Amino acid sequence: APPPSAGRSPAARTRRADRQPRRAEPPLEEAQATAPPPWTGSASAANEPEASAAPVPAYERALAARGRGDPAGCVAALGEAGATQDSRALRLEAECLVLSGRRRDAAKTFEAFCRRYPTHRDIEEIRSLAEAYGGQCR
Image (cartoon, rainbow, N blue to C red; front, side):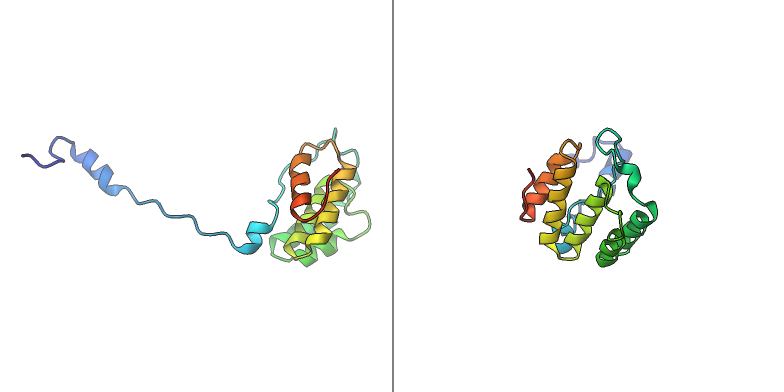
């Protein structure tokens, strides 16, 4: 009997031989598994009338702090007067509170988001995050 690869072209045999086995995804670290996903959306004027009120430098400093793994610095930057007056800054503050282990404070911040922006396009996700950290979104 001819070998099993006799009827196939050399190119087909090579493609099969070149296939790499699939690797399992690495497990998420605990902080990554419990933290809310970073929000990358843009502000929506229809849902966020106060969006222009947030001081850009404080928000940018908070993003940079979160990016370098400094959730306390992120919260501190957003703690400046008026820095959490729009939905994206309020959400970032809640994310940084979660990352710094302040889950109850994060729940309160998610609750504040729900009160201020009840028609926001991400309200269902925010509601589930508030509840996941022990809060209620009404």
